[in-house]
Length: 92
Image (cartoon, rainbow, N blue to C red; front, side, top):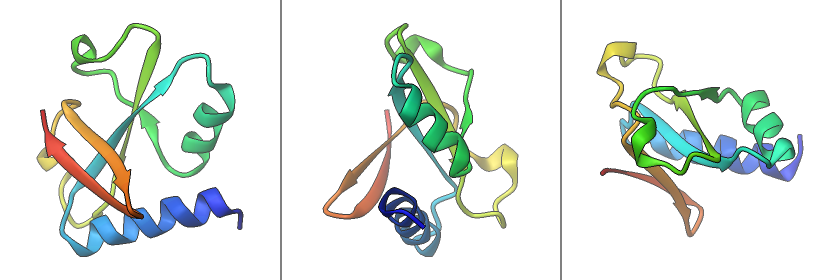
């Protein structure tokens, strides 16, 4: 397993341990390697709330805690950042 996959895995585990239901991130639509990477690590394109991101971007989301029903997942206005190795989420 590569470094990127290990980092995403560690971030997902941190989020899961904190009870976070899911995470969203924004990728430039021209960044094909990143798009492929996030798809391979379980992220899917999110189509709701496109007004909050630049047109040339793609929003990806991933459910983190499978125990949380999909309808409890916050809408696409959730942003994610990885700071000091810990992923955090906040409502916009």
